[in-house]
Length: 173
Image (cartoon, rainbow, N blue to C red):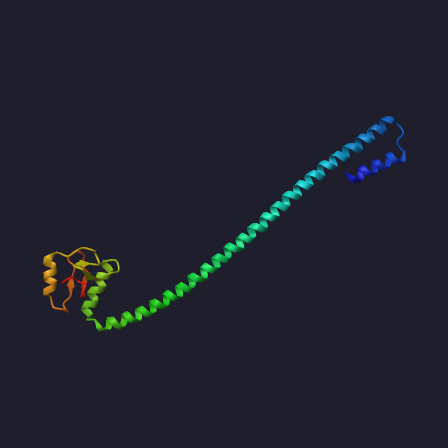
């Protein structure tokens, strides 16, 4: 378009056009080309401005993604460290349990494991202030009397949930 406008302007300036009608048409074409060129330049400028705004938004979003990824990496690192700590504690507790389990009679350990499976992981519960801490039920007076009368090494169970009751000084007997 610029080349055409330059060529037409050169024709106009050289005086090669002699008829007034051709001269008028050529001037009109040059003005039309200038207007069209101005419109296209405006479109190009608008596109460039939108491109700059889009590029700024891309930069902003890229920084946000990097920030979020940094937070994810940090959380993942903390999670992995917590897993390692939990795995270490699990191994330690498992070893301690094996030592304690070796000192418990086999039939009592078998009963405990059976109750633990039936009761959702808790086979024995503390008797605290006349309440079974497994089912959170206060024991009846007759049941408490039976537990008081039982030998200290006797296995006593809760009538409500069937868990083994662990008696302590806080049992309320």
